[in-house]
Image 1 (cartoon, rainbow, N blue to C red):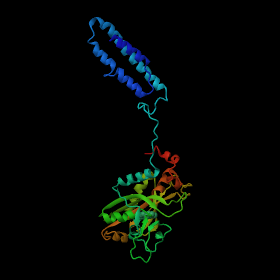
Image 2 (cartoon, rainbow, N blue to C red):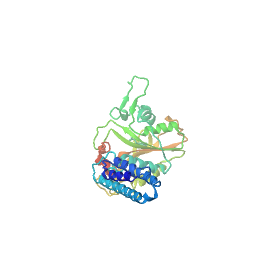
Image 3 (cartoon, rainbow, N blue to C red):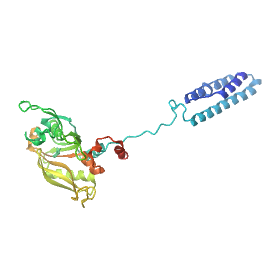
Image 4 (cartoon, rainbow, N blue to C red):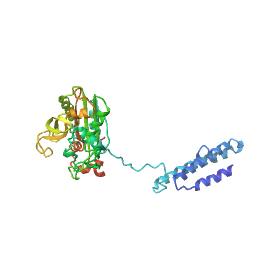
Length: 346
Ligand code: DAH
């Protein structure tokens, strides 16, 4: 046994390792519970009493040596950076770059959160739509200019002589989701519909052919314009700050009557006048109005029993006001230098 221990002492001394897996094999072979040294300690019990002292001493020496050798090999490995980086599972990972939410997603989420606090649910509809949902049921007259090829991307368009008017197109606004919701649900309805919309526009800092909107719809008995105004005031103060004021200017949309556009007091100067609000003190943020009775009827809702309001806003517009990013193209180009700036906003 003494011979065996002596040869192991030499062996341990001469071991070299080139990777952490080799180091681990060394540990398993000599130092682990099932290793050589443990089994020698087991054999040691059988050693005759006159040899016990010598053998015990040597065995302890071997154990110590193997442990020391293990420690120094480990140190050596750690100090040589190049050693088998692929297999060393104990190495700390390289700094892992974390992503960030897109500013449009951030603002969309914030708007959804605000409306969900007052009982609005989220509903969505398809981006590829038909003329019925985007225009006809929303009370657009057949010759309304918004149907024109200039604004709408048509996927499939019937000739005027065709008796079946099922034009297929990319929706130009999220108001189409109103139509779907009214068809599928009974009042009371309280819903917001975020989504992508498409218009045939030349791309510039101020216009894009793809952008995002959020549509709102509230239908019940006795819904009034005052309800619309209070809801929008609540929303504006939640999104743009407690001091925000709103104003409603008369406007026109085929699907609402009366219709209005809402301005908020300038988020930069608070209404005093600055170059963001072009010295007017106001910023236009959304369109709104009382749902036109023709729309209610076209969607199967009794307009004598129910009234409702609707509104629609651009998410890019809200993001521009919130983050002061005034070139629309930045929202679509996936430039990491831009997106990285939203890392801290969750
Ligand atoms: N759909 C309109 C647009 O794209 C926005 C809008 C205005 C939506 C008034 C509405 C509304 O629901 O009531 O410009």
